Image (tube, rainbow, N blue to C red; front, side, top):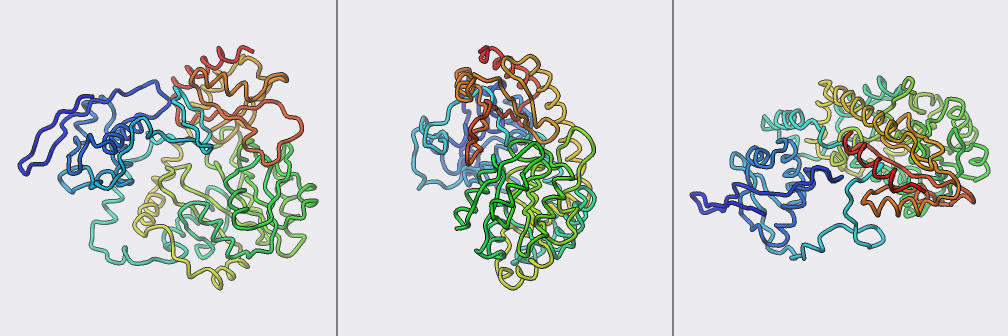
Amino acid sequence: MTVIMCRDAVGTVKMNELTINLQTKSGIPLYEQIYEYIKNDIRCGRMKSGDKLPSTRALSKHLDVSRSTVELAYEQLLSEGYVEAVPYRGYYIAEVEDLYRLDPMKTRETTVTGRKAKDYLYDFTPNGVDLNSFPYNIWRKLSKESLVEDRAELFHLGNPQGEYGLRNAICSYLHQARGVNCSPEQIIVGAGNDYLLMLLSTVLGQNHKFALENPTYRQAYRLFLNLSYEVCTVDMDSRGMNVAKLKESGADIAFVMPSHQYPLGIVMPIKRRLELLKWAQEQEGRYIIEDDYDSEFRYKGKPIPALKGYDSCEKVIYIGTFSKSIAPAIRMSYMVLPEPLLETYKEKSSFVNSTVSKVDQLILQNFIENGYYERHLNKMRALYKNRHDVLLGALKKMPGVVRISGENAGVHLLLHFKKGITEEELVRKAEEQKIKVYGLSEYYVESPAETDATILLGYANMSEEQITEAVQILKSAWKI
């Protein structure tokens, strides 16, 4: 490590340079490597409270990376409280005297089982987002414009459902892009899908049984269980949730992802969508929760309207998010309530304050209304399509692969292997080469009696060069 320091006129220690050994071929983004390096130095006491970090321009030039990469690292440190931004002066290490000093070898994140997370050259996470393509300059411009005048009302508590301007912008977007017709009054804005589902539970009440697809989005399954609902899973076929088995389950709430099911990547055809709607209409109190996951990214055929777009009987509760299309840290999702449930919400839950700041809502509103969101989506679709095509091309003649699925939408696909190869063996052999891949079995609540080994490969946060190199390594590792 090379740190060149001096003191300014008031005695503040200034770091003019930080020499960080960046691994350009690592699966870890460059901004994250910078962030981790500075964070660990702060936590271990090598950087002291009040020390001034190099400017983003100086550090980006010194490390030979884009300025936006350094800015993202600093913004992450800022959001976590490790540094403070002083207007017109720069970034300073925050007051962290009470922070527990950690051994640098113990600061790495652990997995959910408590085991130490491993270092990987490449990580095919299906949950990745390309943060290097985040529109920093536009977002910064809109942030400044939002605060250019003294607007005290921005810092008052806002509408519990979210600010009307943002809800109106979301309505326009849903009509144009997803075929959903709704009013701003039906929309509730919240900090993430988890919050919205918890809020929904106060509207629906407890006397319900939830059915989720199997395999499924485990986070939603765990959430409904922890909310003390009776929860079951319903097996899927090639068209999505099996409606005949849904009827047998006795559930009255179905949680589905028709536009791009996670993790199987199935796009539900119109016939199955109408069957689901018919099931919901057959009984009072039945509803469908539509999680419109990954709906923005489709690579084959015309965009399919959301299930909510076919809902003429007010049976679909629609949930969407900006976390996947913009950035996870945006933490902004929205829910469209059917008219009957909207009345219940106003009676039972409208006292719950909004969990998203009015400033952030105004920024996002302007981002959508000024056309920046649409341009950003077009850019990301093209970017992900290129990576999608490179991955498919690199997977040709992959040892043991009998089928590829889920490749028409989203940012991951699935490899189905011939019998005789186990998922555990595939994951282990990839891990031995420092490649992280994901087995389908971890998404099953109830594992099927027989299933071929299936691996998920995500490509959103990997460059085309990284994808090509990582697949070549996997081909060597999987010569089974």
